[in-house]
Length: 114
Length: 117
Image 1 (cartoon, rainbow over the protein chains, first blue to last red):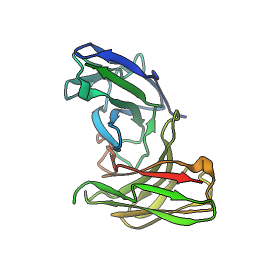
Image 2: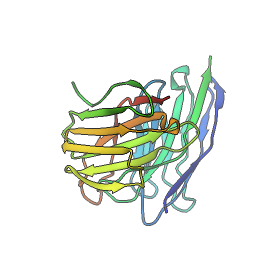
Image 3: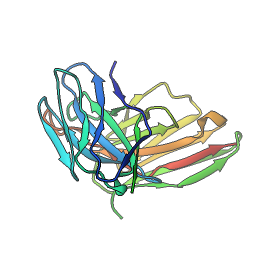
Image 4: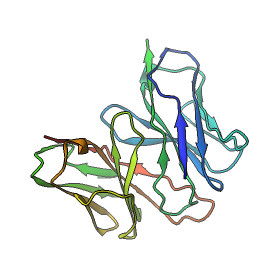
């Protein structure tokens, strides 16, 4: 079956530090890959996505590249801010555009200190 | 109102109570989902509805009963729950069926925090 593995936190960084959150996956076929973010007291919000190998998703300074050879989709940001403190979820979908409940990782709690 | 709205935001119930969670989406989506979010565990997909038809039930106990009267509304009826059912229940929706090149992007509500005493 499908699975997503991501580093568990909490990950604590200082403001303006470089961020990497690792994510690897196991899936049949060619899944689409996502990063979602959850701020305290809120639901999950889509941060970025990639639908095929070598695609790069980007949004709000965050980037992730779909690496089929390493089955990875690591999240990066060059300079984090306190407002980036949240829980980040890596996820995959393997049914193209069909109604497919995504498979999520456990989430990585990110804490940015001023 | 736009997006996905869940009510109530917080619910406390005893093990013998019957209550319901409500989800409403104003995005014109055709698929709706229930997820359970517990501490230290991945999000657990519970149910999927596509055009009001249930397409997935991930071995969820019968004390959870979903209802989808139309593509905009989704309910989760709760009865005789256990303390381990305490969690954040998230509803999501998507525009499924966009073709092989489309990614199924889910839009989530803020969740209903359930505590079972």
